Length: 412
Image 1: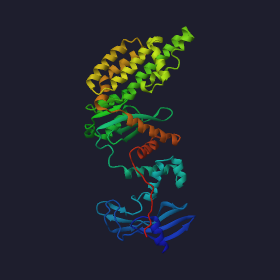
Image 2: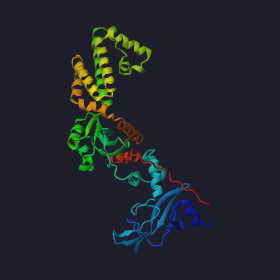
Image 3: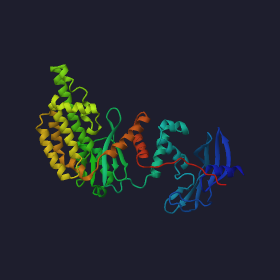
Image 4: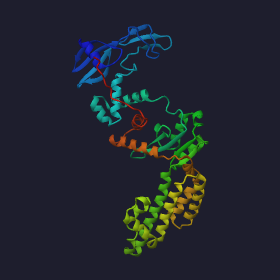
């Protein structure tokens, strides 16, 4: 078998011919050319007349056993009646501006999905900035059309990527379960830029928006998509009630400690039993809560308020749940527990959007899950210094892009 034929099989690139080989500075330089004789326009892929030929350039390819490999070829330019004078199409890469083969970019993208950029940089001996540029190219290649098309149910959330109030706002599609948009910041202007990218026609198709109780987000959604139903995430609403319960526990412990140290022990160690679901309690914790009705009636009242609220949100009839919530709000307002009085005012203000959770059955659970994945990406990179670097990794890892390492199957 000739060396050129062997190299062609090892490269595993269709419509590529090997014309020569050279070793330079410890690297393997392979001279290649397309298998077709008449050049093709890189824009429309049509055969066109040759205009001139450029100086030979190199494309970085996957290493052969630790030996760096470059493909070398002098591009021809074609005179296309539709696109003018442009460089020809070549089979080893899908762009005339890049200096890396498609297989090389796919391998970088596959590894970047699974480890930090520094490891990718060392593995492929390329610059740290180059890793980000290749990731962007892989995203453009694999992203299925416009990710903002067909949105009807979205979830909005923000996450911190660096100390000093550095945030990124993300928008998730509830239907596909992927992040479709991300931008630096977490204010009203940031979210308005999303609806600006979405356009007036696609904004009118939005039916439901899940979020936390951020006033900036609420105001923007009501202004930009007034027809959409806002659904407050159950976790954030339940968290307000749990925080009120914990605030009551701390108040009771401080009050009892000032009067009698022994009496304060009756509420000592009750933080987690109070916050747990009843079916997750241990026998010892159940006994402690049972005796709480006699030991501390205020704290027991707060516990009943928390459990009743959770049972109401478990209901399936929105109208019944709303009536029960109104009764709960009256109870909490008269409970003489400052934390629950404050929470009742907040819930009463957003009652319809909280009941919408029962009607739509949507939460920010999928959004929070993707945000946890983003936090893992941030931790494995030991933080990001810029939002664009993080956003490129979000789009690579959280948009359902499936990459596989390039493999070459040798034909007999």
